[in-house]
Length: 148
Figure 1 (cartoon, one colour):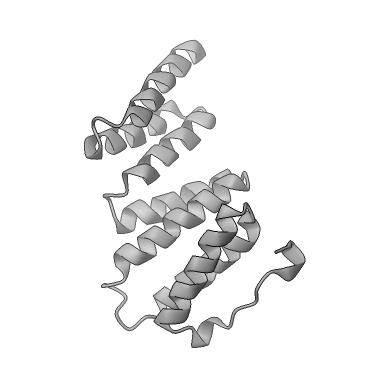
Figure 2: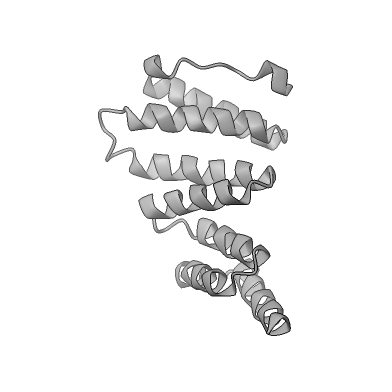
């Protein structure tokens, strides 16, 4: 799929099943590194979920979509959009430790070590033995010392 072949979706008529299909297509696009197209589909899924009659029950699903959108935006080097997406995800589902870890790495990249520390601490509260998170924390401490 090239960017000229980006699927156009009629969101107003999106049923829960077609939203699930869109999500699956967006995931497949991410897997094949077509992040811009995937991001568009993830946004369509979010729009469909916002109009869902059972929105509260769909909260964890919506959080997962925000998390996936964050990955797509981060892959496109749109740091601000990635941060916003991950923040939306953890607002909706505070158990998404990988989003906290991704936020930590993005804030570390932006050299905002206070926010990076805050987010990696939340990730480690949820997954205290996660080696990747422990490495992020160690790397962050080393980088913050160098900056001081």
